[in-house]
Picture: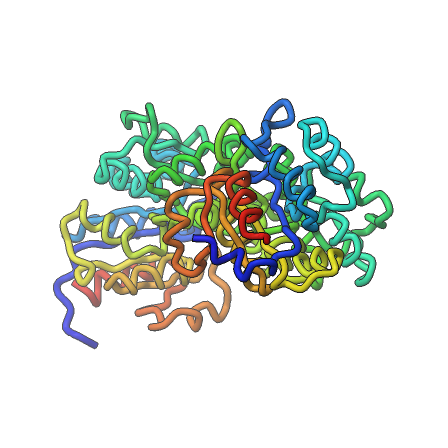
Amino acid sequence: MSTRRILKAVLIDLSGTLHIDDTAVSGAQEALQKLRSSPVAVKFVTNTTKECKRALFERLHKLSFDIHEDEIFTSLTAARNLVEQKQVRPLLLVDNSALEDFEGVDTTDPNAVVVGLAPEHFNYDTLNKAFRLILDGAPLIAIHKARYYKKVDGLSLGPGPFITGLEYATDVKATVVGKPEKSFFLEALRSIGCQPEEAVMIGDDVRDDVGGAQSAGMLGILVKTGKYRLGDEGKTNPAPYLMCDAFSQAVDHILYNML
Amino acid sequence: MAEWCEPVGRVKGVLLDICGVLYESGDGGGVPIVGSVEAVKRLKEANLKVRFCTNETQATREKFVKKLQNLGFDITVDEVFSPAPAVCQVLKERGLRPHLLVHDGLRPEFDQIDQSNPNCVVVGDAAEYFTYKNMNEAFQILMGLEKPILISLGRGRYYKETDGMKLDVGAYMKALEYACDIEAEVVGKPAAMFFLSALSDMGLEPDQVVMIGDDIVYDVGGAQQCGMKAVQVRTGKYRPCDEQHPTVKADGCVNNLAQAVTILLEHLH
C-alpha cells in the first residue's frame, strides 16, 4: 500500500449509512459524536435530487444527529457549483422541492440545461425547450443518470433515459455531477481544502460510494447496511479498503487505525 | 457540380423525402416549401418514376397524403412508403403483438393488428403523446417481458416544424434503450429494406435512382448505403455543419427541391 498522508477528512453517505428512511442506524449518532472529538473534518455527501439541503438537515436533526447544514454536500450542490463556475443561466429541470438549493441563481434567458429527477418536466414541450437550447450550444448538466428508481407501485423512469435522449438528439455529452463521478468527490473535498489522499469515504453503495471515492484517490469503507448485498465487495476494482458491519465500526477503525 | 446526374440518361427514378423537402409540418397542417409543388409536377412530366420515402408517423398514410394533396401536391397513397405499413408486415410475420407508443393519429394503421397481451413495444413519433406516463408504461411493459423487443419507426434525431426544431422518435428510442439496457430494431429510413422496397416497386436498380432528402445521415447516408446517389437540400432540418459531416458526403447539395429538379432535368437528355 502506498504511503498515505495524514487523514484530514471523512466523507459520509447519508441514506443507508447513517439512517434508513426515518430510522437511525444503530449507534450511528454516538459514533458521529466520537468522530467529531477527533481532528478530522466531516462532510455528508448524497446523490439526492428531490430533497434540498434544509430538508435533509431537518430529517437528520430529528434523528438526533449532530450535524450542520453547511456540512451537507449533495449532487444538487455540485450542480449549482458547476453552474456558478461556468457562469451560465440554467433551465432547471428539477423537482420543485429541490429548487431551494438554486435560490439566487439567475434563470432568466437560460443558456444551460440542468436535469435531475423531475417527471413533471419530462414532457414533450419542456424536453423540446431543453433540446433547442442545447442545439444552440447550451451545456447539458446531469445531476445523475439513474435508469430508474423504485416506487411503491413498481419501477419508474429516472433522469438517465431522458438525458440519453437529449445527448443523442444533440450529439452533445452531458456533464454528470453526482456520485460516482470523480468530480463530485473532488468538489466535496475542495470545500474542506484537502486532497483525496487525505480523505476516506464511508458508504453502503459499492459503486456510487466506494468505487467512486476510490477512483478519485480516496480510501473507501463499505458498510453492510442499507443497500449493501452479500458479494457487493467483489463488484469494485480495487476492492474496498475496508468492510464494516455498520457506521460505528467504521468510525472505530478510523479512530484507532488511521489517525 | 452535377455528377449525381451522370452519366446522362442514367437516372430513371427519384425517391423524395417529404418533411423538409416537399413541405414543413406544423400547426394548421404545414406549409409547402417554395417551388416544391411545381418540382414534383415537373418530375412526373419528364416521365421519371417518382416515389416518396417518409418516416412520418403522426398520421395514417391516407390522412397524410390528403393533407399534401390539399397543399397542391401531385401525390397518391400508392407512391408513399412509410414505416407503419412496413412494421405491420414485420409484426404479422413474427407473431408480435405490440404495445403502441405512437401518435393517436397513427393508431388506425394498426387496426388489423392484435394488440392484446403485448409482447413487444412499437415506438413512433408520438410528439405530444410522449408524456412521462406513456413513456413509463412502455418502459414497464418492456421490463416485464422475458425477451424485451423494442421496434422503432425510424431513428431520426430531430426535424423542423414551422415553429422550430422538434425531438424525433430516435431520442425516445434511445431513452428506452438506455432504461431497459436493450437495442431497438429500426423499421423505416435508414433501414436498407425500406429503401429497397421502394426501388422494387419502381422496378429500378439503385444506380438508376436518386434520393433527395434533408437529413444527411438517414436520407442521404441511408440511400448511399443502398447504392443510390443522394442529394441534400438546404431546407427542413438542414444545418450548415451537415456539409462537413465526418462520415457522410452527399453527392450533391442544393438549395431546395426545385433547384435539384432543374439540375436533374437539364442533364436528362
